[in-house]
Structure formats: structure tokens, C-alpha cells
Length: 475
Ligand SMILES: *Cc1c(COP(=O)(O)O)cnc(C)c1O
Image 1 (cartoon, rainbow, N blue to C red):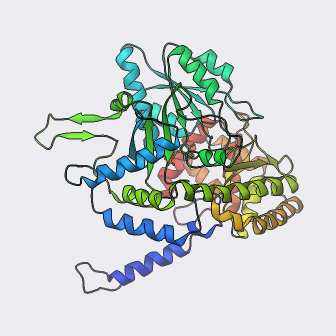
Image 2 (cartoon, helix red, strand yellow):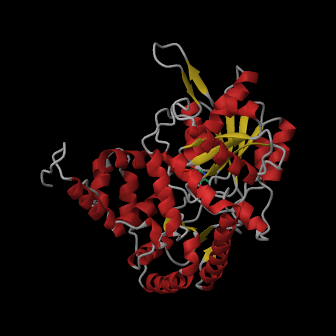
Image 3 (cartoon, rainbow, N blue to C red):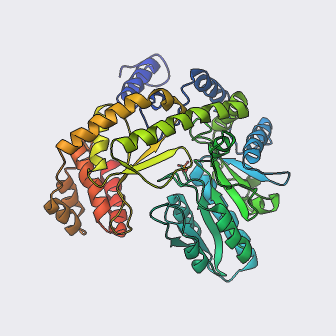
């Protein structure tokens, strides 16, 4: 990069050109070619509006609302829109956060401190279906709760209520249900969980991170959506992401509580230092108000009717995708009520299928599964409104890819796997075996091997391996 006329050593144009070049080499979130990580309406006006609102507020911090009082208004408006969507009433309270993980950490903290205020001497436990998002386990690890994992039915992928009933105890600080879960898109029996929670006087959290902006609209479009929100009496808190089906820029979510008296357990205040009196409503302090302003703008722009229209596009795409996926001989997991589809195959490697689709430009997500936990290898599809116009092209490529994989199955050598499994102590051997290096982007065949290793090896070993590889090689 050449020296420019500004303060730094590089010319801004060169810097931007360089970023444009880097960015062009990657999948494009707005393209509609991605069935994971992207939630795309296909509406350029929306994208532009979000960008302008973001830019207006990006230099303002959410740390101190006394300096920027408009942030209080924006946050109240956003939270109350989501609260209404979740069947909340006068007493419902919440906060804007930077993502689903943060919403979940805050809900777990609130539930822990609520529990501790009544049971100061017990180590709190959190009951989690195996399909719950890992953010709950992370929150438990961060905050000193014991995760108690309970099985799900491997046909329906809904949490096993009897197992919850058996594990709930006086140490239980929270029970979690998903609406829907991320891997398969199935909604847990929230009424069933609520009955248990009310009976045992335990906090029930509903994770509607991915479903919060879809399920209410699907219901209004006539789909049979089970009850999952504050209309169910035992539900104390709900997490809803804006940066998924709220179609806002990344860094936006909401955590809601049935009652303001529960929300206070999430806050943190401190006045024993020589600096400013600190009151944090969330985990971070200094943070850009850009995501909040953009979220406010997008919600204003779409409103209930806009989200309803976008949901009907998703529903249309989803129904055609489910039929098309079945028609090529793949098996849909569970009966997903929402906007997520997961499928598997007993005949071909769906991980290999994902590579075949990738060569055709489609990004679909491999879920490796685990022989130890009984989870199948599967493909996850997050369906967006933009996909409505791309279903036929997608299914045509899927058909071709299935044929391709059928006629040329990738053989994973047992020897390779044994070597991976046998080198617990030696990262360098693993690196060598997988052909990984800091310089080289992981090759497709290596991804297949890694995926297969994750499926075959014990989860604790896989977790250690993932940390080592990312720590040593990626960053
Ligand atoms: C995305 C998601 C989360 C976590 O949200 P992040 O925004 O990625 O931190 C939690 N639960 C479910 C069901 C999700 O889909």
C-alpha cells in the first residue's frame, strides 16, 4: 500500500480497495446463496436504511444514557415491540443486548442471583435439553452453575419431559426450552415444561433467539405453532435475537423478563472507585449505539405487516424445500415448525454433499453429529425470505449433488481416523495428519476428515482438540 496525504501511512482509497478485495473472495451474505449465518430479505432499501441509522449512531456509546438520552427512547421502543410479539403485558421488561449469547448469559445470571437470594447455600443447577444452544453451557461455566443435560426424543427432537421431571430438584435455578432449537428447528413442549416449572417453583427460560421473529408470524399465517411465549404462565424470561429474523445488522438481541422485579437481578452497579458511578444493564460497558439505532430503524420500517410478509415468503420457501429434499431421498429430522430444516441420509455422507453444493456456490451447514451421543450427521438450512425465488435452482443443484456423491463416495480411511484418535497427546501429529498449517486454508477433503473425526471421537476429546487447533493454528 502506498503512502497517502492523510495522517497515516496509507491512502484511504487503497485501504478500502484492499478490504473490498478481501471481502470479494468470501461468500456474500446478501446473495441468497447462504443457508446459514445470513438472514436476508432481499430488500436493498432495508439494508441501506440500516446502514444509515448505524452510521448516525456508531460513534455514540451506550455506556451512559445521561449523555445520549435518545438511546433510552430507542431501546424502549425496540424492547416493547419484541415484548408485544412475545405476548408480554404491562409488567414485561427487557434490555437490548449485543447478541443471543449475551441475552442468554444475562438471563442465566438473573436466574442465578434470584435463586441465590432464596437459597444462599446451594450450588445452582440449570436443566438443559441436549438441543439447547451451547451459550447456556457457556453461561453456566462462566457463572458457576452446574449444567444438567437431559435427553431429547431422537425422532421428534423435543425435550423428554419425564427426564426433566426426574432431574429437577431444589438445586434447580433454571429450566430451558427452545422455540425452536437451532440444530433441527423444532419447538420444545413449553407448556409441558411450564407445568413442571410452576409445580416446582423454578424459573423457565424460553430461547426464542432464532424463532422470536418467525413463530408469531407463522402462527398468524395459519401454521400450527405450539404456545411458547409469556402467554404460558411459567415462562420467566425469553431471549429473542434481532440480528437473525429481525433482519438488523449483527450485534442486536433482546432479553425479556415476565416482570421488572426479575430484570433487576441482571444489572450491576458500582460506586467504590474514584471514577464515574457505574450502572451496567448488560455485560459490556462502552459499546457502539449503531446496532440499536439500526434495529430501531429496521423495526420501524418493517413493522408487524413487513415481518408478516417476509414470513410468508419463508413459509413458502420452506414448504417447497421440505418436499424437494424428501423427493431426492434425504430424510428431514423431526417435524420442524419454524424456518429451519435439518436433513440427513443413511446412504450418503451429507458432509460430502455440502462440498458438492459448495462447488455450485451454495453454503449449507454441516452438523457432524456424534456416535457417542446418538446424533446423526446432518445438514442445517436456515431459510430466509430471499430463498423464495431460489428454491428451484437450489433443488436442481441438490439433485445433481446427491447423484454426484452417490456415484463417487468419499472413503474416509479408518487408518486416518485411528491416527487422529490415537494422538491425544500430540497436537503436532494432528496438525501434520490433517495437513493443517497457518498459511493454508483448510482443504475440502480435510474438512470431511475433521467432520468425521468430530462424529466418531468422544466429545471431551473433540472439545480439547478444537481449542488447541484454533489456538495454535488459526489465530
Ligand atoms: C443464534 C442462537 C443463539 C445464540 O445467539 P448468538 O447471537 O449467536 O450469540 C442462541 N440460541 C439459539 C436457538 C440460536 O439460534
